[in-house]
Image (cartoon, rainbow, N blue to C red; front, side, top):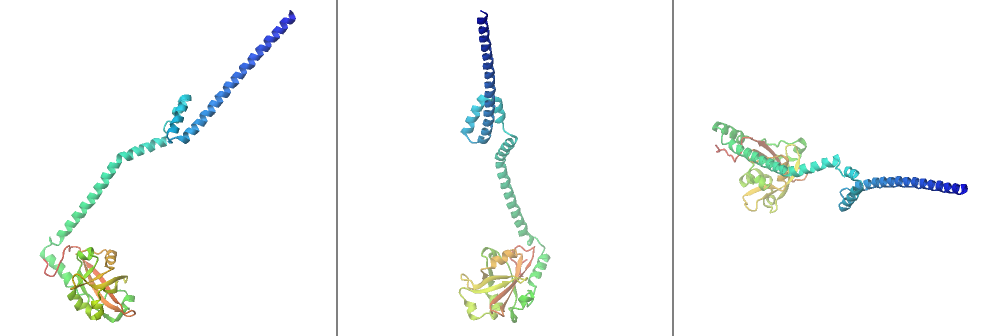
Length: 291
């Protein structure tokens, strides 16, 4: 009996030991499962960070993760500070876009209005002057006698053939000089001042004559001197006049250009020298009889 009890107790001990080992195994299994779950959570977080903004895949991952770890998921999918600032900036941009367009439109209208006001004020300058002031300005303009030799640097002056230049003359720039990009020269002036230096072929060349125009600094501008086809009583400088007027920021009515012509002693080609005087108060066509 003692032997049977001993065997029975040994069996119980073995059973107890087995239960303890099984319990220990269950605990270790739960710990392992927790570790696996934590690892999956971490991997899920990494995956979600990569999938943020990628559409349905990111949404599905969020749903699955919320079912397992709602607290972690809520923290993970909460917008970061950078995302919040970006969203605020986009909302602000969408809200301010109409305002910006209105602001730009207002600036353009204001600028146009100022330009109109300035043009209007300029158009009244000469007309509102007293007669004595008008006469003084007109006298300064029309009593001016240009120098016989053009005011150019020495290296340009040395190119003048035999030291001979045409009789200088001046004219007021009109609207046409800017809209048509040509400097008009009346036939009487051309015949009086320029013809003495022109040969018969140059006077009647259908396509005109290539010339070089110099400013007072000696900078060269290729142009063409020709007779107008529409009105054959006039001549003009073209094919380069626009560049000259832009370079010197010439103004209609206010600027009076003076011209000389000479022949290049090295090439025998025709050359012009163009200078100008500016009168800020003049804003319309004037003549000696104006005013």
